[in-house]
Amino acid sequence: MTFDEISCYLGAVESRSAEPSAEAIKVAIAALKRDAVARGDQTAAKRAWCLEQALSAQDNYLRAFDGLESGHFYGAWCDLEKVEIDLGFLERHDTVSWPRFRLDFIRTYTAKWQSLFPYKLFISPELLEEKECSVCHQPFRPRTPCGHHVGEIYDGEMCCLIVTKLEVLGVAFVEKPVQKYSVLFLNDKDDGKSRDHYNYAVVQYAANALRKPFDQWDIERTYRRQPHSRFPTIGRNDLCPCESGKKYDECCLPESGVLRPHLEFTFYTLPPDGAGHEMYIE
Amino acid sequence: MNPAYARVAADQNFSLPKTLDRLTDETRAAVEKAAIILLPNEGFRDFTEPMFPGGTVELFRHLREHAPEGTSVEIAIEDQDYKELVLHSNVLQLAMVIVDLLIAPVAAQLIANYITARLGSRSKDTQVRASLIVDRKDGTAQQAMRISYEGPADTFEQSVKTAIQTFAQPVPASLAPAAPAPGPEQTVEPQKLLKPSQATKKKKRRK
Image (cartoon, rainbow over all chains, first blue to last red; front, top):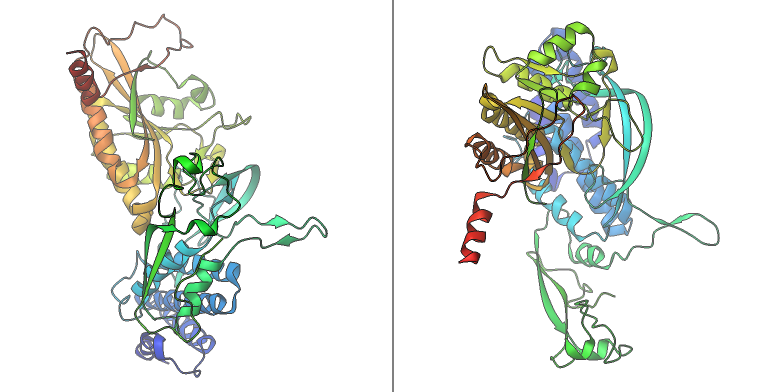
């Protein structure tokens, strides 16, 4: 396959047929890269790397959508994180082809999907590291630069830092992690195994209402009053279920309902039958 | 946290001694002469070894590459002792920088450029945490101001430059810190300096 043929394949991400498979395309890109490196053509090798990254971002996004549809939410979350990483690496080298390969859409909707997940707290390791250059394997030191720049492409591979020595100093809990994989899960009391205790109702609602990965949707976050009948166990002297910290009878009880966060979705393609129009999430 | 800055009095080696003791004479001489110095963190939890925030080598190289000709940039560590403390929260932590007042605005701009290049499109949702010690030697007295910044990446340059400008103004007698007693281990409590806008508000309230 040629560069142009691969670009056509990536450009048809929305209506791609089963053949050739993404795996076959990966092999074809690797062959192009090998040839370019053998010829000493750094421009072509870099172009192959860019196509590889674009394919990886598309693949991970499509896999995330499958995960969302099939209810494998944590897996989908990790795939969305991989999309973010792929695009983060790619953006300093090529953004011109993003509209054609739908990567601008993928970036926008990756962030939208991530915003629907219930994860709020993550583990953040504190590590003391010594590193080396992934290209020449020289120790990464301030005054003796090896000449390679982190993030640049050499022979069709991105220069990274490889950790050669590592000491864990601690672990912190953070709300905004660099690596989003590190979600906290509870251990089951009985068997001690990790279990997924999160409520995925919002993300599930959106996934059920979409037909295809590239269907467009928007979300608006507002507040709306919910009927008092939804809170039958709350006494007038209890704390208000709107979480204001005030007593119920001094806050929302005299009002038409309890003020609660409200999400309003707009789907630009008619959702399939069975997708709910309105629902409350506990 | 809003960007904040505080003025501290300091002697010539106000925060360097421990770090400099670990250096060879050659490196130490280079560090002492430099206009921009990157300092290690020496007090993370119970850990006393010097360590730098992740990405410090890139910052160091960026400063060396882009600093005006004749401006010496140094890092207060020997190559073989260089280690990085990598925290995986989405905050870009920069190494503490000591910079001469004259070059401070340029240094702020170079650091801001580095932040933009490093974060790319993440600039919008990443916080930056940085500390600059701006050193002023005017022949009659020496003072330093620590500028601590924690805030959005895109307001770093303007906030830090504003703080530097404030420091470059003559110090009002009422705010001038007492001179430190001689001795390299003398520490002086930071004296909080009100931002000009806050000072104006206070005056208005008194009326």
